[in-house]
Figure 1 (cartoon, rainbow, N blue to C red):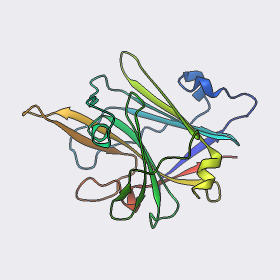
Figure 2: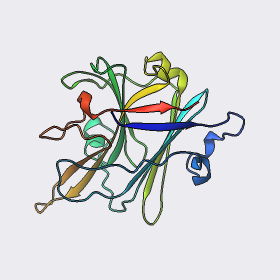
Figure 3: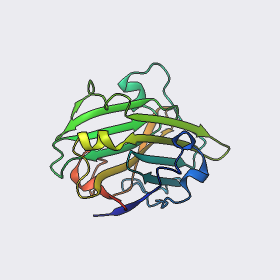
Length: 212
């Protein structure tokens, strides 16, 4: 199983209000190993970073793409699902019973839901209140989505075992086809080895190792 090491930072030196500042992420390992196993075309570069301390887990996606599509008709599940976004899935075990999904578009609209095997989704479920904070920004070559998740909420959901969080890291990229419709390219850190795109499967997860 693929591993990513989440470096620890000193509580006294952190400033979670600066999660969009590159300086905040200097100690973080940079994960760039993303691909689309179902698409022969190369995917645009993604840089993912994470850090943690005794209180919070921090994450940052920088996506090198300026042709971003956001469905802005409303804030419904369908609207977010039809938009460019980044995604983190966390599971309590490889049985996926349950697992939790965070799907975030570049404007920080959040689709958070509880899931069970065979794509049984509960969209009424929400991440514990006030235990997640999101920010985003854009520049001339990329957009960034960053967040802070409390360690307490991860523990409450039984997602940290022996300093490991089993995690899926993904992106959905929407592009206009020849008929003018927006269609997704599915991008993942871990190749689930499925014939069709499927992130909702045990083989699409890797391990985040919390370094002490």
